[in-house]
Length: 617
Image: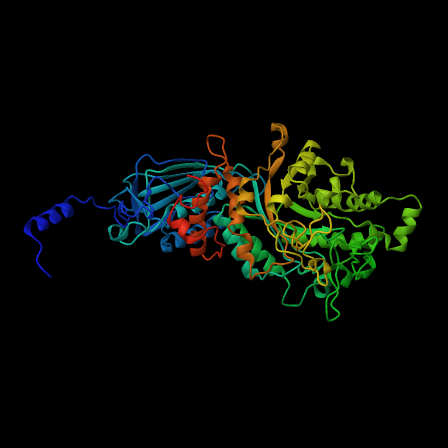
């Protein structure tokens, strides 16, 4: 190869000398000849999910974490002590970097050695409406960071935020240590005090390890309520000391049961992340169905141990008969006219309160099937003598709700059906507003409006937006509705018609965008909005188990987490969905690095080329 002329060598030398240096560990600006490559992100884009209430970072300066980084705090509260140990390990070990490298920042020479936690009231118990606010600051060139909170639970939220501020971007200049924004100030608090996930562990069983895994993922997203729908038609998987036969005969197998030790471990583990566990024992019916018969002579739920207190147990659900005995396979309801029903129910409730310290206890009370009650001769005689289905439900509520509220000192949560159900309801006089909360799931914002307009506190779980099981087709067998591919008449889409449901009663699939843009306060007055405690996304488990748990929940539950924490609108009052896409993409990748197998929301190419996958520029 011929030698280059001297003037070309001199020109190359000048270009090398004048070429601007990239920030340590950051990619250089892409050449203009390749416009398809993304420019580096500006350092000012601090990625925290859910988005904090307020962030101030006046200068793009990062500081490395010292290899001896530690968290200092007076750890009198056991939950905070466990959280500090967890986050210290996580922050030291994690090496997450944004998919598109950051640029245009300065790296401080002073490493952050300590994070100091200050909690003004360390003995505040975990409960409804607990203060989760915190402030966080990384002091410039001081070697320290601070988190201040009124309660341990706010401090735990601050620890999660600090863990997300740290990322692997300093390269050799930071000694391979994570770096954090220096001079950053965050002031943060949740918009709603109730931000949860409902998990149904009755239709399919979830091992304890997967519940703990989900609780950890909830903490990453600042969710604070695990609504544990423990029992239902298909199984009674929790072992209760006073009535052990309910689990002995009602669980799928001896290995598919939650022991007392399991429950206490789950509750304690949740508390270490500031997560409440609210148990649900659905009575007098079992959510969408009731008691089912299993193979090998195994009898479902309550009817296996106490057949005398259950009506229409172990019958075919008869979807084409009139009237059907259940909304889906599995039949049976507690008999409000049998005195033994209440003795067993009180034993169950008393044992549940001993295991679950939360001040809320969910009693279900949704989707009463009148035909199932009428299957019992005593009930038929009661109705023939002038009694009503409403009166039957009223008898049950009157015998159980005061017991829970007064003797067990719990606030009762019911599904909206108890007040708004299409067939069987009770009046407001039976449901004192002071000790009753209603959870909405039908008709989107309309039923939330009806509940709060009646003066009740509400938890929103609209099936149209927050049911994460929807859109996966039907699950009953021998169903000829799948055989047809053309509409018989307009307005009746078939399962396999292009506009059909695929067999899912709540289709379509609830995308993360649908979840994110849902406003749970839509149509409410300011006074009515004050009665909305928050919301829960729900995973009913007819078609879910531990093999698909992460992908069913995440990142869609993360979308709900942000809207419930800081809303879905920017300071201009407009929905920030477009901004959220890139942030959620990066957060999803970080969750995967943390062991949460969240499903992707875009091709990787989109993450590497910000803005190029938008519908418009």
